[in-house]
Amino acid sequence: MNDFAQSIAAAASLIASRDPVLLGIVALSLRISLLASLLALLIGAPIGGWLAISRFRGRQVVIVLANACLGLPPVVVGLGLYLLLSRSGPLGFAGLLFTPTAMVVAQVILATPIVVALVHRPVALLWAEYADLIRTDGLSRLRSLAVVFSLGRTSLLTAFLAAFGRAIAEVGAIIIVGGNISGYTRTMTTAIALETSKGELALGLGLGVILLALSVSVSTIAFLLVRGVGEK
Image 1 (tube, rainbow, N blue to C red):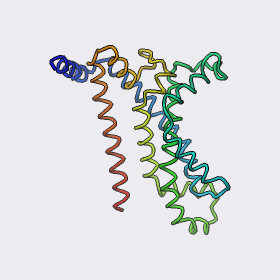
Image 2: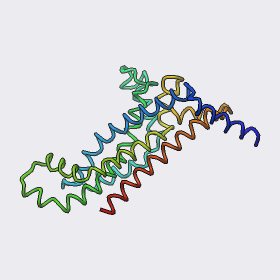
Image 3: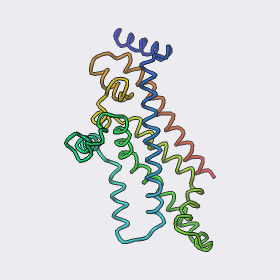
Image 4: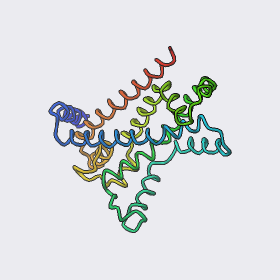
């Protein structure tokens, strides 16, 4: 119990003193996860919107597959990317393995299905309500989607926050393709795993507190957005 109290005190000291190592890990985590979340939004939102306003053979199959991808095992995604990016893999020539870029790609793969699912449902509801009016104006499919996105912009923000929450908390895939290299690819989650395995809890606890605060903040913002929309 005394060791645990000492670890808590040491973690609080690291946070209060703005330890450079801790801040560097947090900054890298934020850069990678924010970029991955933005890319996931740019990729997933059009797909979700397209599935909502389009009607074509096999559409339901695509929707089911998109929702099934919500449960992608991170370690399997990491392993697949590792095989693709390794020297003997088809993309090995790019030299992306054990780089932040590879970590961004892994997080994009895991976060995009979340965006697709969270955009598809509200856009489908908006399309059901405004489709006739939009068709009357003679807008193209692309402009129609832009109008619906404008009406449902809160849903886009919610999807982005959910993607960020998934990305910032991910460890399985990024530790495989990033390598957990100090000062280069070490994020909050991978650092927590490393420090815990070494039995050095101070840095791990400090990062855990920051990660928990970020996760709670993101969840709170998303909840308030959804509740605000529901009350309008």
